Length: 471
Length: 104
Image: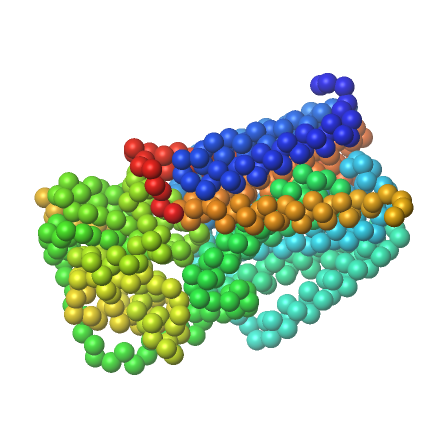
């Protein structure tokens, strides 16, 4: 390694890395520039890591390199093997690692501030920031573990992972009390003159418990918000650590990630017409069945896959609305094949994506991209909602609440939620596994309309049958 | 005005400006790429690896530096995994002759 760099050189290199990270995010404004953006991100990370390695060149660089190789290999292996339908789980797992790393670094910083070039004992200001970075990191870790369990469907193995909200009486009071106690111990930690290990340990332990308690009451379909929120937390944790180590790079990168997650949470909440607070407090969907009751004797028209194929093949325009059901059935490839056949027959086929379709922001777009659907066939809700009125056939695949016209009726539970105006098209085909109500526990009048035909069955099987029937 | 500026104040300045930059950059991200956005921000937040490397640095291994090594390993999983999975997803988005307009 080169002779040790001066603090100024190091900081300037960190500045270059920070700019690279900003360019990485900027690249994502369009699919054409996104890959270059990712290259900037990798370059920024390389600069940051190499610079820091040079700083500790005289120390235990062998152990550090070993840890990097082991971790990097695991990461690369997972990144290559993971299925696109599993992206939400992967992202949740990765959030938990950032959170844990932040906590470990914080402990090391309390133990030996000198190795970070910070005065020992830590000044009160740095301790306050360290406290914030630690508890946010701890909450990110345990919260993400719970989110991972819920997303991976491990509810049967372990009750806390249940995708239904886990609620108990006095839950919010318990959380509030724990948060106050945690802040109390945090204050004891940063006001003490010595290292105050006890206060620090108790504070961290409570934060881990809080992370679990905050996420368990949140139901499966609120996951897009939860995962964005944890994304945001992981950024703030990094920024908090950056503050306590006086490291601008960590502050910049952490703030970028923190604001990104916060904006995604906001977009997701808006798409569900719910306030952030109500999502956090959780319990939504627990009272299922109350609203669904009293549906009376409305009749549903159901048809076979062959009927659906006939209707679509003879239409001029078709819009496909994919939902979580498509991801569960891993039907994206079959859908892409069906689209190709329809296009060969001269049908204008497009996809309409609701912002909260799937289990994380942009989930459907990635699944369709994986199935090699060109992205110019895929439209966001606001761009395509005006087109339903002139569309012959809409095929709804495993989506329910996002196409529910009740959203336009005052007094309904989802009144005001932005929905895809599927009901305005001439014919609606709905594929569902059964007549069970959606996550909001609401009945969907769309299913009882005269122009609607239900095609029951697993999305993948139904679509494959349609593909066969089109010829 | 006298004396030097406290590092915390400078940190706060960097922080506030970075949040502003983040706010404006993120609103420009196309919704179609929100999943790659999450995975790449994940990779970027693992820049805490810098802190982990510093923690692991001291020549005499102690309790703190061992935790540092563990943290390096955890963050390295994310650095490699985050950027590679983002790359993999973005490769999918380029396939087929893309026309000028994406799904904005």
